[in-house]
Image (cartoon, rainbow over all chains, first blue to last red; front, side):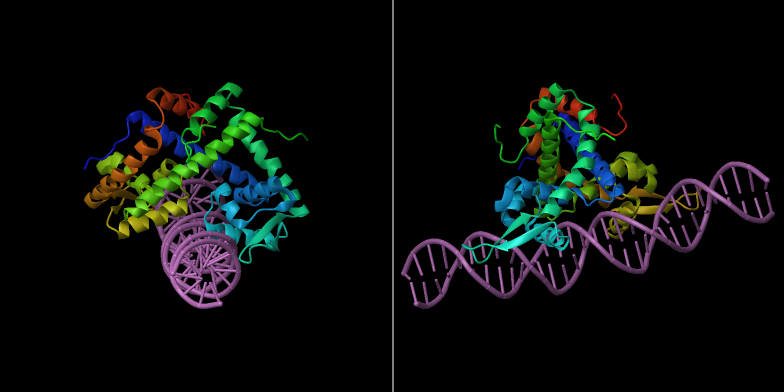
Length: 151
Length: 151
DNA sequence: TCCATATAGATGCAATTGCATCGATAGGGA
DNA sequence: TCCCTATCGATGCAATTGCATCTATATGGA
């Protein structure tokens, strides 16, 4: 059986993507840490819950949105709840599940994280590429997404 | 004091980059796991050591190349050594340090990982973008790198 | 030479992650 | 109704990571 082998350009682009994405995450996490704020994953969850509004979200709905494993979502939610940033509500029509809703202090935390996170994004990406280049980049990345959606 | 805020296009491109890079890593790690092979980080180290040749590398030289923290490199090398994939040699002119060299079975492991990893790269990236698009992507990513090298 | 400081690498301990599995409810067919 | 299987979410335990610190050697200046 034959093995598929990537072209040199593919390997180069792959390497860049791996390295750059890790650098960007790392730098952003460092800034959050320096500001005494929780990690990016907390923001992701708070963001999704804020978008979802008062209805909240079921934990399993969070899984695909934040790209975390089920057990990680379960435990992250436990930490967020312990910190009073989200609340869990029993859901009437499914005795197994629950609905998770962001609290006011969760919204406040989200704002505080965004102050740093947004600045980091602007700094590391917005300041380095033109609007046109950003569109190009987003378009190319879209073609690598899991469900090869057109968008 | 004013907070810098990213443009919508910046946020969109950032989101794509975060999500896509994580998906690609995850899928690749899954394939390696399914093949009973060690994680990507092992490949990275073995690759750097293979490139370095017989002279090997000092652990601190690996740190920047593989983007791992010092203690992670230290422990990863311990695991690789335990598996006989690398060997540590005392270095004559610096009593604190050591030189790490890849062993034959380390090279063999590198080949085995590449069979899967390379196919994954081809599959997830090479098959989805043209050579021209790959160049464009690599070029855009280059501008986001840490030392904003021109390349 | 002697000391102060810097650098290389390892490690104890706590937190997080991964893996496997569990308990509980849903849902669907016989 | 009664199973059988699928889904939701949690959790015990092992592996890994992060953080702080440690030991040992190097280096440079007094």
